Length: 476
Image 1 (spheres, rainbow, N blue to C red):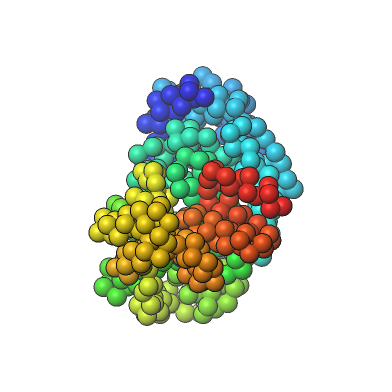
Image 2: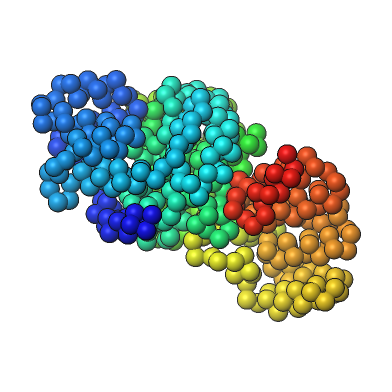
């Protein structure tokens, strides 16, 4: 693994090139649009029609898109040049794939390294629910098994995704749909974890959108649709707004500082800051939410199907009978009326740099928080609660809210603690601890099924949290 990490670091700069630069010849560029739309029959016809040298190159691409990296590496060798992306990338992936283990379900093949084995079965069962939910939304279910890969470290994910480590950390990117597969970083690389199953749902939506739109959906609509749908498999309703993104969206709408949709291309990861990326996600998803509310669920598959023939703005106008400009004005008016959440929440993008949730408490709250911790250690739970409540009153910080709830639990005030912490769990999609607190409350009530449900919610964010896997096994 050490050699793989070093190789990933060395190759990241080579891989980090625009998509258009991956393809060396004109036939490869034509092939790209066909295969990105998932039309493998048409891709194979292009291979058959190519020259003998062209056939070898296109066959290498076909193998890469099918996840057969050794074949792709063999077919793309020798490289056309030192910077031949296909040859270098295929060789790297062929080497990395030696460490993959593999499991399958009806609709998916999941590859992972041994240290992530506990994720595989848990993910496969839920990926089938994700697939079923997406079929209801988009009117499409992938006819072949979809490849999912979990990468063991930032170096390998940076190389496989082609984004590079710096951009990953800047943008908080932990998943990508690319080269006909879903790729995520193992959540054990982030101290607090992240909503890795929602991320898989998000990336699967990208996969489906490419096929329904024939690879004609622009980036902002892609991200809006994927964010709007990425919790529907488990919630029955879109939970696209966290407290943090709702605060950003409301403030930006009222101040007239929204990001133009066209500025979101070629990818949200290239926006200047994480705040801008969060805002862009919230804008695009809230636009989708608005058009579904106005025109019904069928607007999504009909809009995507119409994109096969025209751009997204003309397509939406044809589907709804209203101009895009009029729809956008209605959406802007709608979000300007959003209420600002009581809590501004925690940043909703995964955070590579955080090592402890205590780092997420603002410095001006630390005096009361630390006093509360000291009182709690001494067994003076009433005094601890008083200090935590003072900190929370100053700034409704979710990490302080956890301290408040746990002090309430120590005082036997379970109902109060549950009501208090539930809103925190609902409003912070990447924060695992509120789910653990809810599980503790259920366990104290001897409510095994509820404890199990809360532990599962925690597992969907940070499966490597100490003791969590054992807690799940104790609550079958």
